[in-house]
Image 1 (cartoon, rainbow, N blue to C red):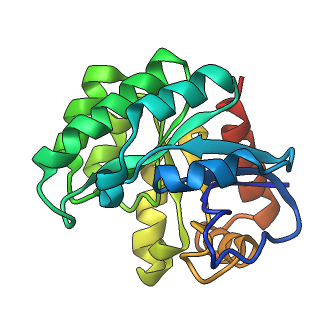
Image 2 (image 1 turned 180 degrees about the vertical axis):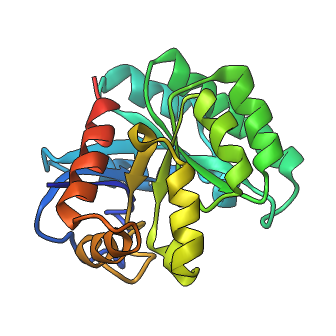
Length: 223
């Protein structure tokens, strides 16, 4: 079985998952998706509720707090910072508020991080919540300090645009017990089986071994 640590099952473009899925972390981009996510009945699914930095005009902290209080299995995400979508000063407050809630209720936070590594590290050092850095692609120098803050690193198909050498060099720096994989479906264009096959070839390991390691790591995050 494999674990997909970040996908969007309520996105209109979502077309389902590959055979062999054992654990699926489905995320929301805005409160408009929370109702649809809450009705998913698949036992393999773990639900993440949050407001993405692209949709802060729809931000709702009270609604998130209510979900976490009423659903003991609910998590937080997709939240984060994105330097390519407006000033970070406008994003930091909502991000920190959602992160603080994830820590208060002892839940996982699924994080979007684009071009803001220094600011992200500063915040995570302050709060040290259990987090997944979604679609992680470096820089390599941030792996150790982020891991020390409690981060897991999820590798999406976007990384396959790089050379095999660069991919192998990045992933080899991630502690094995912190490595996760994701499709970010429907945004990646490929399924998990192809993603696993291509990554495992680059890492010179059997696909089943990559599945085993990342499924174990994703499962370890759950109560």
